[in-house]
Image (cartoon, rainbow, N blue to C red; front, side, top):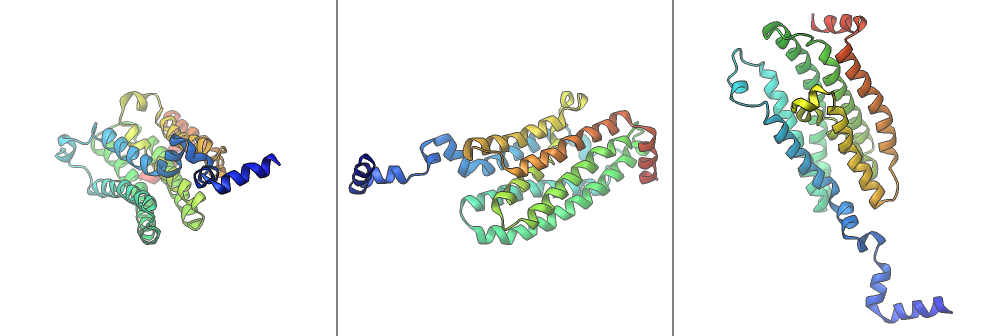
Length: 259
C-alpha cells in the first residue's frame, strides 16, 4: 500500500514524477559533466599537452636548422597536428548531436590515421639515419622501438575503432586510447620524464582518466580498457627495454632497417 500511495503522489505531482524519472547520474553535476563532456574535455587536454610539450623543442633553431631537417618531418608534424584538431572537431560534433557530419568526417579521419601510421614509421627511420649520420648522435637505431610501438598502438586501436564504428561505446574509447598513444611524443619533450623513461607512464595515466570516467559514470570499467592495457603495458615495457638495453639481436634488426 505504501508503494501504491507513493506512486499515486508522483502521478499527481509532475515535479515529483520528473525527479523520479530523472537518471541517477543527473543528480550529480560532476557525474553528469563526465557523462556528457569527458571526451570533448580530453580533446582540449590533448591540445594543451601537444602545444606545451612541442613548444620546448620546436623553435627557430629547428625551423632554420643547419643542416636543415628532412622535409618529411614537417609533413609528419602537420599530420599529427591535424589529428588533434580532428579529434576536437569530432568530439564537438558528438556533443552538438551532429552525428551525420561526424560520420562523414570519420572517413577523412580513417584516411588521416592510415597516413599517420605510414608517415610515422617512415619518419622514424629517416630521422634515425639523419640523427646518426648527419648529427652524429649515438644509438639512434635503438630508439626505433619507441615510434614503431606508437604507430602499432595507434594503428591497431584505429583499425578496431573503424571496425566497431557502429558500436559507440567501443568506438569512442578506442579513438580515445589511440590518441593517448600519440601523447608520448609531446610528453617526452620534458627532460625529466624522458630521462627517467616515464613518458609511457604519463600516457597510461591519460588512459586511466578514461577508466576513472567509466567508474564514476557507469560504475564499471569497460572491457576495451581492460584488453587495451593488457596489451599496451607489456609492449611498452619491451619497447623501453629494447631502447635502453639495445641487445645484440635487436641491433642486427635495426641496422638492417637503417641500411
